[in-house]
Length: 413
Ligand code: EPZ
Image 1 (cartoon, rainbow, N blue to C red):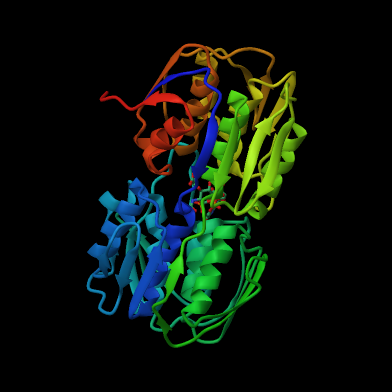
Image 2 (cartoon, protein in one colour):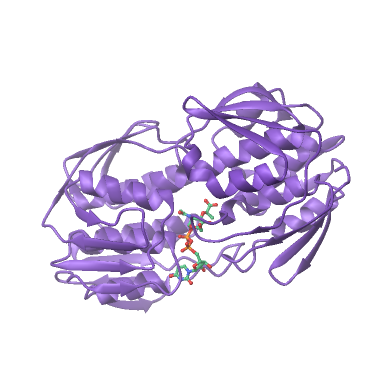
């Protein structure tokens, strides 16, 4: 991606459906009989991978933005390594397969750039529901004649861990209680859709979720919620370029932590029918940020707010508490003139300086977003390579940014 910085972004942008809501929803269709229709599905790499995986498992899938999925006959309960290695969220088929078929074989997802990202809490949850789990040759083999409800406590808040065990518990016999469950809006969205399918889930959106198992779930229609991380990324793009952007199709209530930090930094966020308008005052103030599970400041926005803080007026401390290695973007931002020192799981960002365009490399999804943002604000030209990372989570980002006036284009590497 080639960006010439310096343009103030102006105009309107519409947010796409949330990747991290669409992926578990697609996996949940494994639990159902009859057609599911999910509308507002974003066109992203990870969605294509999930479609391929579900097709491989024997589900019938039609459509693109509006997906129709049917799971009446599942043929092969195995998610192979070549699919799982490209997308760790493939592990989300494990719980539904176990609940529906009584067995599942899924490649153990490796680590990734931002951390080891084990799935021990997923597996402990399934064992608590009575499954036999064994690992052989890089695969997880899970088996259970019939899952039985139980009380499960998650040592750490895990988004896909909560989603995976929640989906399995819907078809277990008896009552399951999930304690220290993740409260992310995407988890609540999944629970609401499972209830529409006929599940009996209480405590939606809280950290204690109670599930009464049922025998069968049926297909539903549902529109995927907007992507709060894409929303936050465009908010910061407006702030970094000193522009004025109207963001449509977004849920302000999902962004409280980010909005309070941006407001503290001197950004003006005005809710407006079905969206919000973002502008910035004459100076950006440095603020300290600490990432936490929802409703805390989202780790998926850490790289983006770090790019913003490079332009702020003094010193900000950004602490990452969710993943152990999510500062890979720091060395790339420093190539663009940022002054950032890493101390343990904190990054000290000294602002009050301009960024200058440079060739940089994307390393993971949200790090690539922070490099796009820095390029929009930098003097001169920035070239970002390996932007396949970006395409996993942002639908046609260069088209959306060009429509806001950015000088950005995708060229063949
Ligand atoms: C989800 O990943 C998101 N992905 C991530 O978004 C997001 O960064 C993350 O939640 C945190 O919000 C999807 O929803 C598909 P976790 P997930 O389990 O579920 C540890 C993006 O950019 N942990 O909540 O994999 C883990 O190591 C992606 O779209 C265990 O120790 O994250 C991490 O330190 C990146 N054992 C912490 O918990 C487990 O069994 C939180 O991880 C599971 C997790």
